[in-house]
Figure (cartoon, rainbow, N blue to C red):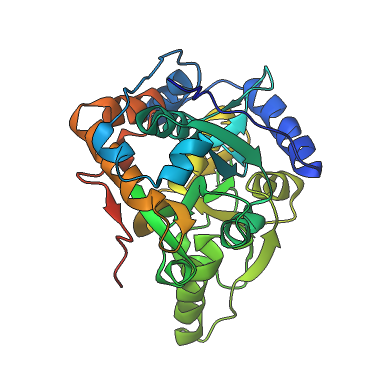
Length: 310
């Protein structure tokens, strides 16, 4: 059995930003029913494991089996998907998922941290064999990578605690809204909201694009932004850790879509990973993983490839 515990390395200023954010997160307690679930998940010591899956391994090319490892790219500023904990250890749902995939394929997983916007180019350029970093599966992204979709997730609106200006998803026209560059929110959700503003004769959203997934929290806290469009799982996690500073509005999630791990177009890994994950779903390990991180609401009934069709 090859080693499957992810190795990792820090890169640049992104880690400094993440470290400051997580220091603030760990100092706060959770509140409310959803928050309690997420807080429990954050402190969970549940250990998950997988056995080598011969059907999935047989789908791998011999060259990859001989190499013995795969390189996984992440942006470790996206709790609860991937982040550095108080012990400076890379953790999160996607990190556990990568290790389970490695165990099922009998391959070591070497995880590298990088800026979110650099991950898909890294896939295209051959730096990474895959990237598991909370990617929304969109038709635009399917033009350059393939996705193995493993959860379903939408976008929510995050504001300062107490929502002092009573914002909602329907009245963001002209407001300063923080989003992460290259995210589903900027690529899909913002154009839809801008179109609605235009139809009502109102100004478009005043978008503040930021490089790291933790940056919208800082923008909100400093008053630079009025609100942030954020994936629901990440927003729920962050607001549960800083209930005196952040909250999600009562709006329904918008643009609920598949989230997938990204691979090069036509990669032989794609079918092998889909086979491994469907087996983990069938034997209950997949559900245990989501429960560990308090993300049961994101579960799917089947692991699919490029599930977004329109």
